[in-house]
Image (cartoon, rainbow over all chains, first blue to last red; front, side, top):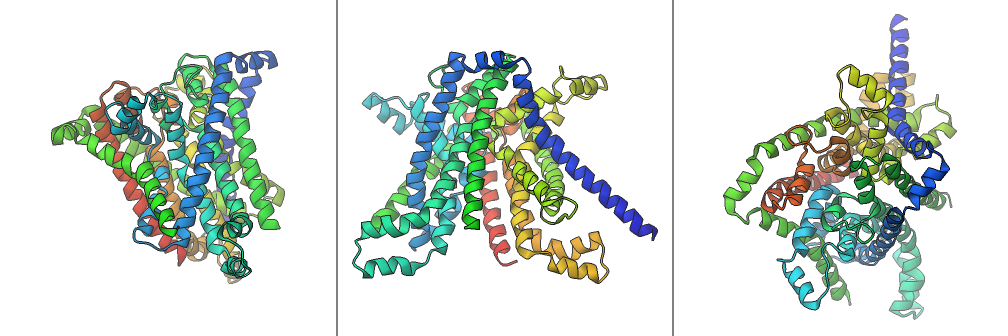
Length: 271
Length: 265
Protein backbone atom coordinates (compact mmCIF):
# COMPACT_ATOMS: atom_id res chain seq x y z
CA UNK A 1 0.00 0.00 0.00
CA UNK A 2 2.62 2.50 1.01
CA UNK A 3 4.65 1.74 -2.09
CA UNK A 4 1.64 2.54 -4.33
CA UNK A 5 1.19 5.86 -2.56
CA UNK A 6 4.87 6.60 -2.86
CA UNK A 7 4.96 5.83 -6.58
CA UNK A 8 1.90 8.02 -7.18
CA UNK A 9 3.60 10.83 -5.31
CA UNK A 10 6.69 10.39 -7.42
CA UNK A 11 4.64 10.36 -10.59
CA UNK A 12 2.94 13.58 -9.61
CA UNK A 13 6.20 15.28 -8.76
CA UNK A 14 7.88 14.22 -11.99
CA UNK A 15 4.88 15.29 -14.03
CA UNK A 16 4.91 18.78 -12.48
CA UNK A 17 8.65 19.06 -13.02
CA UNK A 18 8.31 18.29 -16.73
CA UNK A 19 5.46 20.75 -17.19
CA UNK A 20 7.27 23.49 -15.25
CA UNK A 21 10.42 22.93 -17.32
CA UNK A 22 8.38 23.28 -20.48
CA UNK A 23 6.68 26.47 -19.25
CA UNK A 24 9.87 28.14 -18.07
CA UNK A 25 12.02 27.14 -21.02
CA UNK A 26 9.64 27.74 -23.94
CA UNK A 27 6.48 29.62 -23.00
CA UNK A 28 7.80 32.22 -20.58
CA UNK A 29 10.60 33.59 -22.80
CA UNK A 30 8.26 34.01 -25.78
CA UNK A 31 5.64 35.79 -23.68
CA UNK A 32 8.44 37.84 -22.13
CA UNK A 33 9.61 39.23 -25.44
CA UNK A 34 6.10 40.25 -26.50
CA UNK A 35 5.51 41.82 -23.08
CA UNK A 36 8.79 43.70 -23.16
CA UNK A 37 8.27 45.16 -26.62
CA UNK A 38 4.89 46.68 -25.72
CA UNK A 39 5.90 47.66 -22.18
CA UNK A 40 6.82 51.22 -23.15
CA UNK A 41 3.60 51.68 -25.07
CA UNK A 42 2.40 51.27 -28.64
CA UNK A 43 3.98 54.54 -29.81
CA UNK A 44 7.52 53.59 -28.83
CA UNK A 45 7.04 50.20 -30.46
CA UNK A 46 5.76 51.86 -33.65
CA UNK A 47 8.65 54.33 -33.71
CA UNK A 48 11.21 51.55 -33.33
CA UNK A 49 9.69 49.45 -36.08
CA UNK A 50 9.33 52.31 -38.54
CA UNK A 51 12.89 53.43 -37.96
CA UNK A 52 14.11 53.43 -41.60
CA UNK A 53 17.08 51.09 -41.06
CA UNK A 54 14.99 48.62 -39.04
CA UNK A 55 12.25 48.58 -41.62
CA UNK A 56 14.74 48.19 -44.49
CA UNK A 57 16.33 45.24 -42.67
CA UNK A 58 12.94 43.53 -42.34
CA UNK A 59 11.89 44.06 -45.96
CA UNK A 60 15.32 43.02 -47.24
CA UNK A 61 15.13 39.82 -45.20
CA UNK A 62 11.69 38.95 -46.56
CA UNK A 63 12.75 39.69 -50.15
CA UNK A 64 15.95 37.62 -50.01
CA UNK A 65 14.23 34.77 -48.15
CA UNK A 66 11.60 34.65 -50.89
CA UNK A 67 14.29 34.43 -53.59
CA UNK A 68 16.14 31.71 -51.67
CA UNK A 69 12.90 29.76 -51.24
CA UNK A 70 12.13 30.00 -54.97
CA UNK A 71 15.61 28.67 -55.81
CA UNK A 72 15.14 25.84 -53.35
CA UNK A 73 11.73 24.92 -54.76
CA UNK A 74 13.32 24.47 -58.21
CA UNK A 75 16.48 22.58 -57.29
CA UNK A 76 14.81 20.76 -54.37
CA UNK A 77 11.95 19.35 -56.46
CA UNK A 78 14.42 18.29 -59.13
CA UNK A 79 16.80 16.64 -56.68
CA UNK A 80 13.94 14.94 -54.80
CA UNK A 81 12.59 13.60 -58.07
CA UNK A 82 15.95 12.29 -59.27
CA UNK A 83 16.76 10.68 -55.92
CA UNK A 84 13.45 8.80 -55.76
CA UNK A 85 12.83 7.91 -59.40
CA UNK A 86 16.21 7.11 -60.86
CA UNK A 87 18.76 4.46 -59.89
CA UNK A 88 22.36 5.44 -60.56
CA UNK A 89 25.75 4.98 -58.94
CA UNK A 90 26.25 7.48 -56.13
CA UNK A 91 22.55 7.83 -55.33
CA UNK A 92 22.89 6.70 -51.72
CA UNK A 93 25.81 9.04 -51.16
CA UNK A 94 23.85 12.02 -52.48
CA UNK A 95 20.84 11.01 -50.43
CA UNK A 96 22.78 11.05 -47.19
CA UNK A 97 24.54 14.30 -48.15
CA UNK A 98 21.17 16.07 -48.31
CA UNK A 99 21.08 16.50 -44.53
CA UNK A 100 24.57 18.00 -44.39
CA UNK A 101 23.35 21.62 -43.99
CA UNK A 102 21.35 20.53 -40.91
CA UNK A 103 24.34 18.80 -39.36
CA UNK A 104 26.85 21.52 -40.12
CA UNK A 105 27.25 24.45 -37.69
CA UNK A 106 25.93 27.58 -39.40
CA UNK A 107 29.10 29.53 -38.63
CA UNK A 108 31.08 26.85 -40.48
CA UNK A 109 28.67 27.09 -43.40
CA UNK A 110 29.22 30.86 -43.46
CA UNK A 111 32.99 30.41 -43.45
CA UNK A 112 32.76 27.89 -46.31
CA UNK A 113 30.79 30.30 -48.48
CA UNK A 114 33.11 33.14 -47.55
CA UNK A 115 36.15 31.14 -48.73
CA UNK A 116 34.42 29.90 -51.84
CA UNK A 117 33.31 33.32 -53.04
CA UNK A 118 36.29 35.30 -51.73
CA UNK A 119 38.40 37.55 -54.00
CA UNK A 120 41.19 34.92 -54.25
CA UNK A 121 38.90 32.06 -55.24
CA UNK A 122 38.09 31.19 -58.89
CA UNK A 123 34.47 32.23 -58.42
CA UNK A 124 35.48 35.56 -56.94
CA UNK A 125 37.93 36.30 -59.75
CA UNK A 126 35.47 35.31 -62.41
CA UNK A 127 32.83 37.57 -60.89
CA UNK A 128 35.32 40.41 -60.68
CA UNK A 129 36.12 40.12 -64.39
CA UNK A 130 32.42 40.33 -65.18
CA UNK A 131 32.12 43.32 -62.88
CA UNK A 132 29.61 41.63 -60.54
CA UNK A 133 30.16 41.61 -56.83
CA UNK A 134 28.90 38.61 -54.92
CA UNK A 135 30.62 38.50 -51.54
CA UNK A 136 29.39 41.10 -49.04
CA UNK A 137 26.48 41.85 -51.37
CA UNK A 138 22.96 40.49 -51.64
CA UNK A 139 23.80 37.44 -53.84
CA UNK A 140 26.02 36.08 -51.06
CA UNK A 141 23.13 36.33 -48.57
CA UNK A 142 20.86 34.41 -50.96
CA UNK A 143 23.53 31.71 -51.43
CA UNK A 144 23.92 31.34 -47.66
CA UNK A 145 20.14 31.06 -47.23
CA UNK A 146 19.86 28.49 -50.05
CA UNK A 147 22.61 26.40 -48.48
CA UNK A 148 21.09 26.40 -45.00
CA UNK A 149 17.54 25.56 -46.16
CA UNK A 150 18.55 23.08 -48.88
CA UNK A 151 17.14 19.90 -47.23
CA UNK A 152 13.58 21.12 -46.56
CA UNK A 153 12.01 20.84 -50.04
CA UNK A 154 13.81 17.58 -50.88
CA UNK A 155 12.72 15.97 -47.62
CA UNK A 156 9.18 17.26 -48.19
CA UNK A 157 8.87 15.86 -51.72
CA UNK A 158 10.58 12.47 -51.26
CA UNK A 159 7.94 10.65 -49.16
CA UNK A 160 5.13 11.77 -51.49
CA UNK A 161 6.96 10.51 -54.57
CA UNK A 162 7.70 7.21 -52.88
CA UNK A 163 4.05 6.69 -51.94
CA UNK A 164 2.74 7.68 -55.35
CA UNK A 165 0.86 5.16 -57.42
CA UNK A 166 2.75 4.62 -60.68
CA UNK A 167 -0.38 3.42 -62.46
CA UNK A 168 -1.89 6.91 -62.65
CA UNK A 169 1.12 8.06 -64.56
CA UNK A 170 1.12 5.00 -66.81
CA UNK A 171 -2.58 5.48 -67.51
CA UNK A 172 -1.86 9.02 -68.66
CA UNK A 173 0.81 7.78 -71.07
CA UNK A 174 -1.42 5.01 -72.47
CA UNK A 175 -4.10 7.55 -73.18
CA UNK A 176 -1.59 9.40 -75.32
CA UNK A 177 -0.61 12.26 -73.02
CA UNK A 178 2.75 13.86 -73.74
CA UNK A 179 5.52 13.86 -71.15
CA UNK A 180 4.98 17.52 -70.33
CA UNK A 181 1.22 17.11 -70.05
CA UNK A 182 1.59 14.09 -67.75
CA UNK A 183 4.00 16.01 -65.59
CA UNK A 184 1.77 19.03 -65.14
CA UNK A 185 -1.54 17.17 -64.81
CA UNK A 186 -0.56 14.04 -62.87
CA UNK A 187 2.84 14.32 -61.21
CA UNK A 188 2.90 17.95 -60.15
CA UNK A 189 -0.44 17.89 -58.26
CA UNK A 190 0.83 14.87 -56.33
CA UNK A 191 4.12 16.53 -55.42
CA UNK A 192 2.66 19.93 -54.62
CA UNK A 193 1.76 19.48 -50.90
CA UNK A 194 5.34 18.41 -50.16
CA UNK A 195 6.78 21.27 -52.18
CA UNK A 196 4.57 23.80 -50.39
CA UNK A 197 5.22 22.65 -46.85
CA UNK A 198 8.95 22.26 -47.57
CA UNK A 199 9.04 25.73 -49.10
CA UNK A 200 7.32 27.29 -46.10
CA UNK A 201 9.70 25.67 -43.63
CA UNK A 202 12.60 26.83 -45.78
CA UNK A 203 11.17 30.33 -45.88
CA UNK A 204 10.76 30.59 -42.12
CA UNK A 205 14.27 29.20 -41.57
CA UNK A 206 15.71 31.68 -44.09
CA UNK A 207 13.96 34.56 -42.30
CA UNK A 208 15.58 33.52 -39.03
CA UNK A 209 19.05 32.63 -40.29
CA UNK A 210 21.96 34.39 -38.61
CA UNK A 211 25.19 32.42 -38.44
CA UNK A 212 25.73 31.67 -42.11
CA UNK A 213 24.64 35.11 -43.23
CA UNK A 214 26.50 37.32 -40.75
CA UNK A 215 29.89 36.20 -42.07
CA UNK A 216 29.20 36.75 -45.78
CA UNK A 217 26.78 39.68 -45.84
CA UNK A 218 29.09 42.59 -45.06
CA UNK A 219 26.25 43.91 -42.87
CA UNK A 220 26.04 47.44 -44.26
CA UNK A 221 23.01 49.05 -42.58
CA UNK A 222 20.19 49.60 -45.05
CA UNK A 223 21.90 47.67 -47.85
CA UNK A 224 23.04 44.21 -46.79
CA UNK A 225 21.91 44.08 -43.18
CA UNK A 226 19.19 41.50 -42.61
CA UNK A 227 16.80 41.53 -39.67
CA UNK A 228 18.57 39.04 -37.39
CA UNK A 229 21.90 40.85 -37.83
CA UNK A 230 20.12 44.14 -37.12
CA UNK A 231 18.73 42.69 -33.89
CA UNK A 232 22.20 41.47 -32.93
CA UNK A 233 23.62 44.98 -33.54
CA UNK A 234 20.90 46.57 -31.40
CA UNK A 235 21.63 44.15 -28.55
CA UNK A 236 25.36 44.90 -28.79
CA UNK A 237 24.68 48.64 -28.60
CA UNK A 238 22.30 48.14 -25.65
CA UNK A 239 19.16 49.29 -27.45
CA UNK A 240 17.00 46.47 -26.11
CA UNK A 241 13.70 48.11 -27.06
CA UNK A 242 14.73 48.46 -30.70
CA UNK A 243 15.89 44.84 -30.72
CA UNK A 244 12.64 43.52 -29.21
CA UNK A 245 10.47 45.55 -31.59
CA UNK A 246 12.10 44.02 -34.69
CA UNK A 247 12.14 40.61 -33.00
CA UNK A 248 8.38 40.75 -32.47
CA UNK A 249 7.79 41.51 -36.16
CA UNK A 250 10.05 38.66 -37.26
CA UNK A 251 8.62 36.23 -34.69
CA UNK A 252 5.01 36.95 -35.57
CA UNK A 253 5.80 36.38 -39.23
CA UNK A 254 7.52 33.04 -38.54
CA UNK A 255 4.75 31.88 -36.21
CA UNK A 256 2.17 32.57 -38.92
CA UNK A 257 4.16 30.53 -41.43
CA UNK A 258 4.59 27.67 -38.95
CA UNK A 259 0.92 27.70 -38.06
CA UNK A 260 0.00 27.59 -41.76
CA UNK A 261 2.26 24.58 -42.34
CA UNK A 262 0.67 22.71 -39.42
CA UNK A 263 -2.80 23.66 -40.58
CA UNK A 264 -2.15 22.44 -44.14
CA UNK A 265 -0.63 19.19 -42.90
CA UNK A 266 -3.52 18.54 -40.51
CA UNK A 267 -6.01 19.19 -43.32
CA UNK A 268 -4.18 16.85 -45.67
CA UNK A 269 -4.18 14.07 -43.09
CA UNK A 270 -7.83 14.71 -42.25
CA UNK A 271 -9.06 14.81 -45.88
CA UNK B 1 16.37 13.46 -70.67
CA UNK B 2 16.97 11.17 -67.70
CA UNK B 3 20.74 11.52 -67.97
CA UNK B 4 20.39 15.29 -68.08
CA UNK B 5 18.42 15.38 -64.81
CA UNK B 6 20.90 13.11 -63.05
CA UNK B 7 23.80 15.22 -64.28
CA UNK B 8 22.07 18.41 -63.14
CA UNK B 9 21.45 16.95 -59.67
CA UNK B 10 25.08 15.93 -59.39
CA UNK B 11 26.09 19.45 -60.42
CA UNK B 12 23.85 21.05 -57.78
CA UNK B 13 25.20 18.78 -55.05
CA UNK B 14 28.80 19.29 -56.11
CA UNK B 15 28.52 23.08 -56.28
CA UNK B 16 26.37 23.65 -53.22
CA UNK B 17 27.60 20.94 -50.83
CA UNK B 18 30.78 19.41 -52.23
CA UNK B 19 32.77 22.48 -53.19
CA UNK B 20 32.46 24.25 -49.81
CA UNK B 21 33.53 21.09 -47.96
CA UNK B 22 36.58 20.60 -50.16
CA UNK B 23 37.45 24.28 -49.90
CA UNK B 24 37.39 24.30 -46.10
CA UNK B 25 39.54 21.16 -45.95
CA UNK B 26 42.05 22.81 -48.29
CA UNK B 27 41.94 26.06 -46.35
CA UNK B 28 42.91 24.34 -43.11
CA UNK B 29 46.06 22.94 -44.76
CA UNK B 30 47.07 26.20 -46.45
CA UNK B 31 49.98 26.69 -44.07
CA UNK B 32 50.77 22.99 -43.88
CA UNK B 33 50.43 20.68 -40.92
CA UNK B 34 51.92 23.30 -38.58
CA UNK B 35 49.28 25.87 -39.43
CA UNK B 36 46.52 23.37 -38.86
CA UNK B 37 48.02 22.06 -35.63
CA UNK B 38 48.63 25.56 -34.35
CA UNK B 39 45.04 26.61 -35.14
CA UNK B 40 43.75 23.68 -33.13
CA UNK B 41 46.14 23.62 -30.19
CA UNK B 42 46.02 27.32 -29.40
CA UNK B 43 44.98 27.62 -25.74
CA UNK B 44 41.85 29.55 -26.72
CA UNK B 45 40.85 26.85 -29.23
CA UNK B 46 41.31 24.06 -26.67
CA UNK B 47 39.26 26.01 -24.13
CA UNK B 48 36.53 26.72 -26.68
CA UNK B 49 36.31 23.09 -27.78
CA UNK B 50 36.15 21.96 -24.15
CA UNK B 51 33.34 24.41 -23.41
CA UNK B 52 31.40 23.25 -26.48
CA UNK B 53 31.83 19.65 -25.29
CA UNK B 54 30.45 20.52 -21.83
CA UNK B 55 27.42 22.24 -23.33
CA UNK B 56 26.71 19.32 -25.68
CA UNK B 57 26.81 16.77 -22.86
CA UNK B 58 24.65 18.75 -20.41
CA UNK B 59 22.09 19.84 -23.03
CA UNK B 60 21.72 16.39 -24.55
CA UNK B 61 21.24 14.72 -21.16
CA UNK B 62 18.64 17.24 -19.92
CA UNK B 63 16.68 17.38 -23.16
CA UNK B 64 16.71 13.61 -23.60
CA UNK B 65 15.12 13.16 -20.16
CA UNK B 66 12.54 15.94 -20.46
CA UNK B 67 11.93 15.35 -24.17
CA UNK B 68 10.99 11.69 -23.74
CA UNK B 69 8.86 12.48 -20.67
CA UNK B 70 7.02 15.29 -22.41
CA UNK B 71 6.31 13.18 -25.51
CA UNK B 72 4.87 10.46 -23.29
CA UNK B 73 2.59 12.97 -21.58
CA UNK B 74 1.54 14.64 -24.81
CA UNK B 75 0.57 11.33 -26.41
CA UNK B 76 -0.72 9.31 -23.46
CA UNK B 77 -1.57 11.38 -20.41
CA UNK B 78 -5.24 11.19 -19.51
CA UNK B 79 -4.89 13.98 -16.97
CA UNK B 80 -4.24 16.42 -19.80
CA UNK B 81 -7.45 17.02 -21.73
CA UNK B 82 -7.24 16.71 -25.53
CA UNK B 83 -7.52 20.47 -25.90
CA UNK B 84 -4.54 21.13 -23.63
CA UNK B 85 -2.59 18.44 -25.41
CA UNK B 86 -3.23 20.08 -28.77
CA UNK B 87 -2.20 23.49 -27.48
CA UNK B 88 1.02 22.20 -25.87
CA UNK B 89 1.74 20.17 -28.97
CA UNK B 90 1.74 23.26 -31.17
CA UNK B 91 3.86 25.17 -28.65
CA UNK B 92 6.60 22.52 -28.82
CA UNK B 93 7.48 23.60 -32.37
CA UNK B 94 7.87 27.29 -31.56
CA UNK B 95 11.67 27.25 -31.03
CA UNK B 96 12.00 26.17 -34.69
CA UNK B 97 10.40 29.45 -35.75
CA UNK B 98 12.46 31.63 -33.43
CA UNK B 99 15.64 33.12 -34.85
CA UNK B 100 18.58 32.04 -32.65
CA UNK B 101 19.47 35.68 -32.03
CA UNK B 102 15.97 36.29 -30.70
CA UNK B 103 16.28 33.17 -28.53
CA UNK B 104 19.38 34.70 -26.94
CA UNK B 105 17.66 38.06 -26.53
CA UNK B 106 14.78 36.38 -24.67
CA UNK B 107 17.17 34.97 -22.10
CA UNK B 108 18.87 38.33 -21.59
CA UNK B 109 15.45 39.94 -21.12
CA UNK B 110 14.41 37.38 -18.50
CA UNK B 111 17.65 36.62 -16.69
CA UNK B 112 19.99 39.51 -17.49
CA UNK B 113 21.75 41.34 -14.65
CA UNK B 114 19.19 44.19 -14.74
CA UNK B 115 16.13 41.98 -14.34
CA UNK B 116 14.49 40.93 -11.07
CA UNK B 117 15.40 37.26 -11.32
CA UNK B 118 18.87 38.01 -12.66
CA UNK B 119 19.51 40.50 -9.87
CA UNK B 120 18.42 38.01 -7.23
CA UNK B 121 20.64 35.28 -8.63
CA UNK B 122 23.46 37.80 -8.98
CA UNK B 123 23.31 38.71 -5.30
CA UNK B 124 23.60 35.00 -4.55
CA UNK B 125 26.74 34.97 -6.64
CA UNK B 126 25.24 33.09 -9.58
CA UNK B 127 25.78 34.70 -12.94
CA UNK B 128 23.50 33.44 -15.70
CA UNK B 129 23.92 35.75 -18.67
CA UNK B 130 27.49 36.09 -20.03
CA UNK B 131 28.27 32.80 -18.26
CA UNK B 132 27.87 29.06 -18.78
CA UNK B 133 24.32 28.68 -17.31
CA UNK B 134 22.89 31.17 -19.80
CA UNK B 135 24.63 29.44 -22.70
CA UNK B 136 23.20 26.09 -21.61
CA UNK B 137 19.70 27.54 -21.27
CA UNK B 138 19.96 29.11 -24.74
CA UNK B 139 21.01 25.79 -26.28
CA UNK B 140 18.30 23.91 -24.36
CA UNK B 141 15.72 26.29 -25.81
CA UNK B 142 16.95 25.91 -29.38
CA UNK B 143 17.19 22.09 -29.30
CA UNK B 144 14.06 21.36 -27.28
CA UNK B 145 11.73 20.24 -30.12
CA UNK B 146 14.16 17.80 -31.76
CA UNK B 147 13.67 14.75 -29.52
CA UNK B 148 9.95 15.37 -28.93
CA UNK B 149 9.32 15.52 -32.69
CA UNK B 150 11.08 12.20 -33.28
CA UNK B 151 9.52 10.29 -30.40
CA UNK B 152 5.89 11.47 -30.57
CA UNK B 153 4.98 9.94 -33.98
CA UNK B 154 6.39 6.56 -32.91
CA UNK B 155 4.39 6.61 -29.68
CA UNK B 156 1.26 7.44 -31.65
CA UNK B 157 1.92 4.67 -34.12
CA UNK B 158 2.53 1.85 -31.61
CA UNK B 159 -0.65 2.70 -29.70
CA UNK B 160 -1.28 1.99 -26.04
CA UNK B 161 -2.64 -1.58 -26.21
CA UNK B 162 0.54 -3.30 -25.08
CA UNK B 163 0.98 -0.85 -22.21
CA UNK B 164 -2.61 -1.43 -21.11
CA UNK B 165 -2.09 -5.17 -21.25
CA UNK B 166 0.99 -4.81 -19.04
CA UNK B 167 -1.02 -2.69 -16.59
CA UNK B 168 -3.78 -5.32 -16.41
CA UNK B 169 -1.11 -7.88 -15.59
CA UNK B 170 -0.14 -5.73 -12.62
CA UNK B 171 2.92 -3.86 -13.88
CA UNK B 172 3.38 -0.30 -12.63
CA UNK B 173 4.45 2.92 -14.34
CA UNK B 174 8.21 2.57 -14.42
CA UNK B 175 8.19 -1.15 -15.18
CA UNK B 176 5.76 -0.61 -18.07
CA UNK B 177 7.97 2.10 -19.48
CA UNK B 178 11.17 0.10 -19.17
CA UNK B 179 9.86 -3.25 -20.40
CA UNK B 180 7.17 -2.27 -22.91
CA UNK B 181 7.44 1.31 -24.15
CA UNK B 182 11.19 1.85 -24.21
CA UNK B 183 12.09 -1.08 -26.55
CA UNK B 184 9.81 0.33 -29.25
CA UNK B 185 10.83 3.98 -29.01
CA UNK B 186 14.55 3.62 -28.37
CA UNK B 187 15.74 4.10 -31.97
CA UNK B 188 13.69 7.24 -32.40
CA UNK B 189 15.18 8.50 -29.13
CA UNK B 190 18.66 7.74 -30.47
CA UNK B 191 17.86 9.60 -33.67
CA UNK B 192 16.54 12.59 -31.70
CA UNK B 193 19.64 12.57 -29.51
CA UNK B 194 21.92 12.59 -32.56
CA UNK B 195 20.02 15.60 -33.95
CA UNK B 196 20.31 17.32 -30.56
CA UNK B 197 24.05 16.72 -30.42
CA UNK B 198 24.45 18.13 -33.93
CA UNK B 199 22.43 21.22 -33.16
CA UNK B 200 24.03 21.96 -29.79
CA UNK B 201 27.50 21.41 -31.24
CA UNK B 202 26.79 23.96 -33.93
CA UNK B 203 24.58 26.47 -32.13
CA UNK B 204 25.91 29.93 -32.81
CA UNK B 205 23.45 32.84 -32.81
CA UNK B 206 21.79 32.24 -29.44
CA UNK B 207 25.07 31.40 -27.74
CA UNK B 208 26.84 34.43 -29.23
CA UNK B 209 24.19 36.80 -27.85
CA UNK B 210 24.01 35.22 -24.40
CA UNK B 211 27.72 34.54 -23.90
CA UNK B 212 29.21 37.88 -24.88
CA UNK B 213 31.96 35.78 -26.56
CA UNK B 214 34.61 36.38 -23.91
CA UNK B 215 37.85 34.57 -24.71
CA UNK B 216 38.86 31.84 -22.21
CA UNK B 217 35.56 32.27 -20.41
CA UNK B 218 32.49 31.96 -22.57
CA UNK B 219 33.91 31.34 -26.02
CA UNK B 220 32.65 28.20 -27.76
CA UNK B 221 34.05 26.56 -30.90
CA UNK B 222 31.56 28.27 -33.23
CA UNK B 223 31.96 31.72 -31.71
CA UNK B 224 35.74 31.27 -31.90
CA UNK B 225 35.42 30.59 -35.64
CA UNK B 226 33.37 33.78 -35.92
CA UNK B 227 35.95 35.81 -34.03
CA UNK B 228 38.84 34.38 -36.08
CA UNK B 229 37.09 35.35 -39.30
CA UNK B 230 36.42 38.85 -38.00
CA UNK B 231 40.14 39.12 -37.17
CA UNK B 232 41.10 37.84 -40.67
CA UNK B 233 42.81 34.84 -39.09
CA UNK B 234 41.37 32.49 -41.72
CA UNK B 235 43.78 29.55 -41.38
CA UNK B 236 43.06 29.21 -37.66
CA UNK B 237 39.33 29.58 -38.31
CA UNK B 238 39.58 26.82 -40.91
CA UNK B 239 41.30 24.43 -38.53
CA UNK B 240 38.54 24.69 -35.92
CA UNK B 241 35.85 24.68 -38.62
CA UNK B 242 37.32 21.52 -40.16
CA UNK B 243 37.08 19.73 -36.82
CA UNK B 244 33.46 20.85 -36.47
CA UNK B 245 32.71 19.77 -40.05
CA UNK B 246 34.28 16.36 -39.41
CA UNK B 247 32.06 16.07 -36.35
CA UNK B 248 29.01 16.84 -38.50
CA UNK B 249 30.04 14.24 -41.07
CA UNK B 250 30.33 11.64 -38.31
CA UNK B 251 26.90 12.68 -37.04
CA UNK B 252 25.46 12.23 -40.55
CA UNK B 253 26.83 8.68 -40.69
CA UNK B 254 25.33 7.86 -37.29
CA UNK B 255 22.03 9.35 -38.46
CA UNK B 256 21.96 7.03 -41.48
CA UNK B 257 22.67 4.09 -39.21
CA UNK B 258 20.00 5.07 -36.66
CA UNK B 259 17.48 5.61 -39.47
CA UNK B 260 18.15 2.14 -40.87
CA UNK B 261 17.76 0.62 -37.40
CA UNK B 262 14.60 2.63 -36.69
CA UNK B 263 13.03 1.38 -39.94
CA UNK B 264 12.95 -2.21 -38.66
CA UNK B 265 13.11 -1.88 -34.90
